[in-house]
Image (spheres, rainbow, N blue to C red):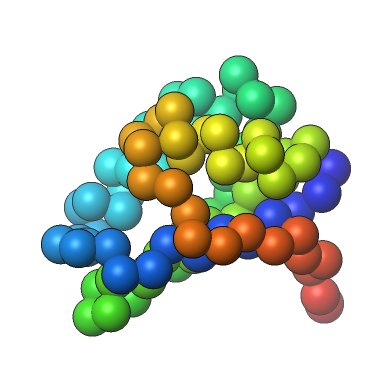
Length: 83
């Protein structure tokens, strides 16, 4: 299944707890879209969050965020894992 990296920029009030909570909400709804959210990274100083997921397409990955917690990604790209 394709991998997608999405980026959320300038998230106001970004904290470790807020990112973990949003990720948990993604996990709750991901199966509805045939997606699997694998990991996330964030920078609390500038409000940037990166999310890595497996999904049938980018629309499904974005739908998980939209319906999980409403924080829509600013950008999403299909990626290939390197070794």
